[in-house]
Length: 256
Image (cartoon, rainbow, N blue to C red; front, side, top):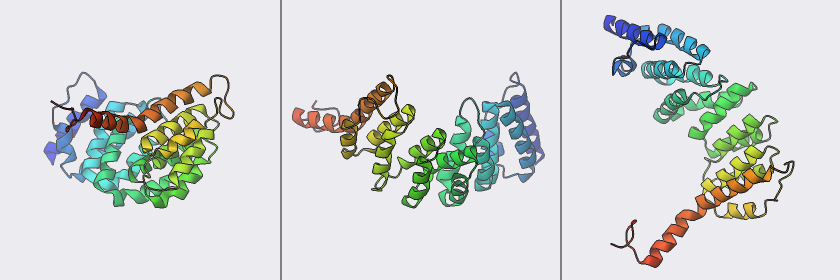
C-alpha cells in the first residue's frame, strides 16, 4: 500500500508540474490496485483539475478512480463531465464510455436520473450517456427532450435518438427535427437520418424547403450540405455494391 501512495504522489506531481515526467504504466497500476485509501486524494486532485480545466489531469485521475471504484465512480464522473467548459472532456467521456460498456445495467439508473434532471448541464450529461445505453423504452424521455426550449438539450437528445435503430418511432421524430428553428440542429438531423441507414428518410430530405422555416438567407446552405452528406451515407454503400456486382468481382477489392 505504501508503494501505491508513493506512486500516486508521483502521478500527482506530474499533474501539478508539466516538467515532471509521468512514469509509464503508473496510472494503470494505480487503477488496478483496488486501494480505496487512494480515493480521497484522487478525488480532491480531480476537483482541482476540473476547476482548472486541466483536461490531461482529469483524464489521468478519472482513469485511476474508475479503475479502483468501477461503477461506483460513475455518478461522480458523470457529474464532472456535466461541467460546462470551452472544450469537451473527451478523455473523461472515454472513461465513462468504458464504464458503461463494462456494466451497462449498473450505470443505467444514474444515466436515467441525470437525463430527467431539471438542471440543463446535468440533463445533457445524462442524454449524452444515453447514446451508449438507449433502449426503445427511453423514447418518451428523448422525445420530450427534443421539444425542450434549449437547443443544447434538443441536440444531445437527437444524438441519443439516432441510436434507437429498429424503433419505428425514432425516424419520424428525427424527420420532425428538420423543422427545428436552429439551422445547426437541422443539419444534425439530416446527418442522423443518413447514418440511421433508412432509405425512406431520403424522401423527407427531398421535400425539405430550400429555406427551412425560420432560416435566414444563409440558413439553407448548411442543410443542403448536410443533406448531401446524409444522402451519401445511405446510398454510397449500395452504389459500391452495385458497381462491384456489375464488374463481376467476388471480393471487396474487385476481380484480380
